[in-house]
Image 1 (tube, rainbow, N blue to C red):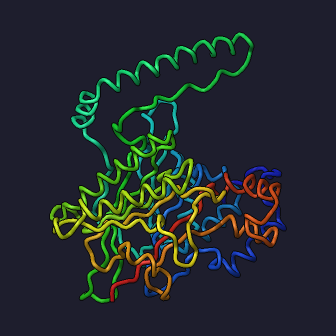
Image 2 (image 1 turned 180 degrees about the vertical axis):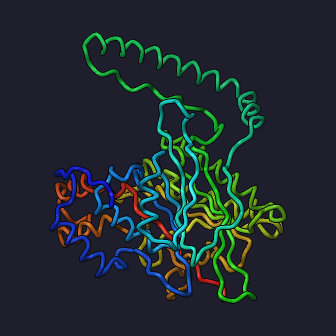
Image 3 (image 1 turned 120 degrees about the vertical axis):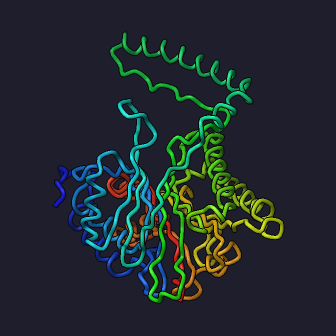
Length: 409
């Protein structure tokens, strides 16, 4: 049993949970939660906000998270805190068939103040096997040093600009202290060029289980990433740096431990005008498929597919945050295996049961329908505010994304 947090007005009450569970048990599929099928596996990603101590969430929220995750055969989880008791409790709730892999903390040096996070996986041993590889994605010291040297002029300018901000901040701190008020937040350092990830992506090798020994399983290096939530430029730099790393690595087919790379991530991709960023990212990936990943000119190239960026043939443009305004979370498939979906397959996703599909479990619409009989965009502003208040921390401010892959026969 989880240690119960003191009940407050910020939690769903007994009658609300009764309504939520009733609609979840009856029709969660209608809100995009994928059903389990023998002929396919469901793989996904879920940023579970501040997933840490058991006592930080009431029991019913843990049960709700468990009911979601048990629909997945493999799920990458971001924003895991240093306290692993919550993740371990989820694994316990899921039962003995589930395994867990988790990174150490990243994002801050041990012993220093900051926001350390872990990246983890939960997976169903009956459907997915973990294989031997586990590592982080990093940039070596020489690459960072050369980048600093080659662009020293713009870095010098950035240091000076940051120093000016710090000087002003220190003056404000002294003023607030004299007034007996809380000091303002320290201004972050904004880099003019990419150096390294704010949190090192973590990857682990997996393969699907097969019923026949004569059939080759689907094999992946599965990358779990939580990219920087900073300025527009910083977000772009991290996203494109990760794509560059994966694209180049995916070409090295003779050296890869498994022939395919699967990215499951919170890329913090949307900001400002969502359509602009979506179109820009889509165009960049298309350009990769036409140049770096073109099999006509490079026989070792992989095919890149980011299905969540593509409008779903049935559900249209997908949003992945609870407020349904952004598409932060992404799935990327860098494949050499012709059994895996390409961008051309996205337009037919979900047309055949058990075949390739992708989507988002729309927790927000489920909650709104359970409590008010309408989707989130149809309820009042106060009703939406109450849903956010009661769910963004104890469930999450993100919604799970997923793909369904047909098992080899």
